[in-house]
Every structure is written in structure tokens, then in C-alpha cells.
Length: 222
Image (cartoon, rainbow, N blue to C red; front, side, top):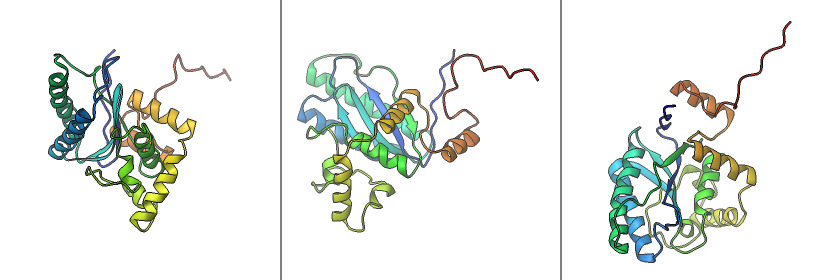
């Protein structure tokens, strides 16, 4: 069966997962993490993508970003992936790819689900340098992460927003939210309320959620 094309929604945040080969940490050292952060923003600027959050995890790079146009997201991730592989291979005296197949992406509805996705990425690791969460909680603004409107709505002053977001990160996301975001990312399905999903279906003329397995139930005879 043909592989379904990715569903991109311009102007909406997208949750992105770029998996590494099994057993490989894409950026095990601080020097490699610094290089990965730098390349993320260099390539994003060229592709006109606003990066909201990044988690440089052992086994995966997880991102939240908004593309300006349809091809921007793919151009960004592909460019970043190719350029970083060269850096990684030089560090580790190896050749070949670092990534386990194509990246995954899920369009996220504005509002509640964008804030949940921000927490899903920023809260993915407590190891220094792995995420940009610290700079949203009062730390130095080292990287040009674009705070989404949902973050700005947390308070009227920088201090209020930092304190409110730190409190949110201290509380784990509800299991149902984590499950839904994880399923959306794995399958490339949009994530949001009923209205958002119906809008995506209408605009893109394709289902917004996976169809139930098996044959549809037959209606009882009248």
C-alpha cells in the first residue's frame, strides 16, 4: 500500500520527531549539543520556520515549530538532518546516516494542545543543554526560540510567564495527553479538538484520524 504523504497545515505548530538509529545518541556531548542547536536555527531561518521548542534526546530529536509555507518544514528538517550528520560523523570517525528513516510530523491545534505540546518537548529531559526549557523559566536566553501565543498568555510580565511556565513543567502532563500526542506523532495525524480536526479534513480532503481496523459493521436489517 502506498505511504500516505505528510499532512502539513501552514501557520499551525507541528510536533516533529526525528528518530536516530537504535543505540545511537545523536548528541552525547555538550559540544555536539551546541552544534546541533546552532544548526537547528541556521537551517530554520533559511526555510522560514519558527522554532518553538527542541529536545535533543538520546535516540530522538523532538521539535515544535511553525512553518510559513507547505514545503518549509520538510526543507528545514532535511537540511538540518544532512548537515548535522556530517558533524556527528566527524566527531565519531564514522560514515553513513544517523537517522532511522523519515521524520514524523503532526499538526497541532492552537490553544490547549499547543501549550501541551510545548510542555511535551520542553519537559522531555532535565539534563542541561537537552532542551530550551530553562530559558523560559528565568534562565539566560541563549537560543532564539519563538514563544508561541499560548506561552505569552501565561502572564503580563516576563517574570509572571516564567513562574507560571515553571509551575506547569513541574507537573507532568496527564497520561491521556501524552498518549494522544505520542499517537499523533507516530501516525502523522493532527491533534486538536473536534472543530480543528473537521477543519483539517475539509481543507485537505483527507481523514484527520485513523480509520477503525476491520470491516465496518453492517446495519441490522429493518
